[in-house]
Length: 68
Image (cartoon, rainbow, N blue to C red; front, top):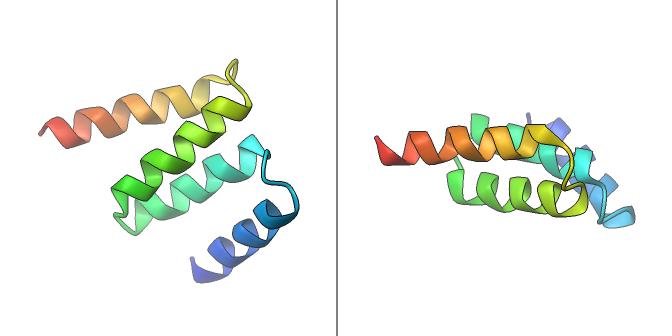
């Protein structure tokens, strides 16, 4: 995952409003159990593409996980 994370971070440096890259970074961070960072990435993804359902869905799953 470090390679994927480095590639996504590099992509976001050049294109900080890339919703898909923020979403994918969130998924990588979820595998590392960095849940606050996951939330930040998903919120950015949903802000840059508010009509895209996937970040909203994952934020809901994250909220369920945190309530356990």
